[in-house]
Image (cartoon, rainbow, N blue to C red; front, side, top):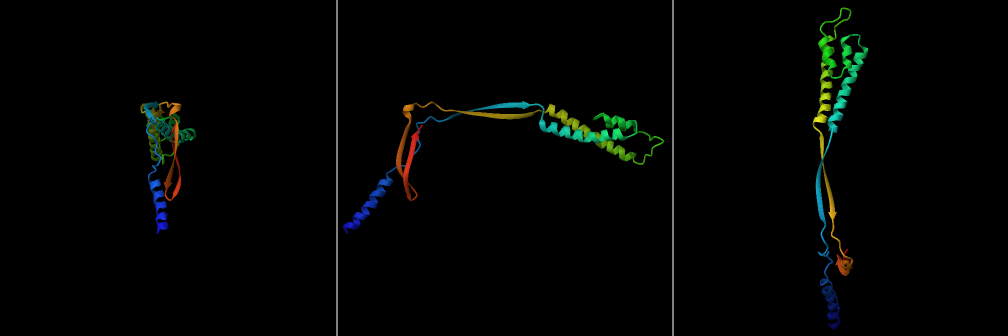
Amino acid sequence: MKTSCAMLAIPLGFVALIGSINIAKAQDEAAPRQYVVKDQAVSTVPNRPLLHSGIWVLGLSYVPAVIVAAESHREGDKRLYIPVAGPWMDLASRSNCPTNVTCSNETTNKVFIVIDGVFQGLGAFNIVGAFVFPETRTVTVGSSKRSATSVSSLSVHLRPIKIGGNYGLAAAGTF
């Protein structure tokens, strides 16, 4: 009976010893970090998405107009070399068909000239809008300041711990 009490006392004493050990925790003496946040608005001109879309729309609608102006024998089609206003000037000069040319496709040509003029105008408005509505970005700049700690306040503490079913050492310190 004495041996079983002794065998029971050793594990109970060990559990009492482990139960009285505290898990290492960070000390509250260290100065907390102070964050300084500054908002700085940066405005860039022009608005890049509007500018890029305007250049593409104007460019893709102007290229066919230049090709037609180069290939056509009509005097009014030579005005298609002028961007944005050229299609409307060409449309205004298309009143009657010349006597030596057939006009079976004249309605279709007028529709294409109007479509081309509309897209050239939209591209030009996008380019102008890129300068009227500049792109605005907000940049948030943050920095941290930590108060200086003296060399004498540096310390390291080692303590035994139990994690799960395993034992080990925990280190805690102030740096």
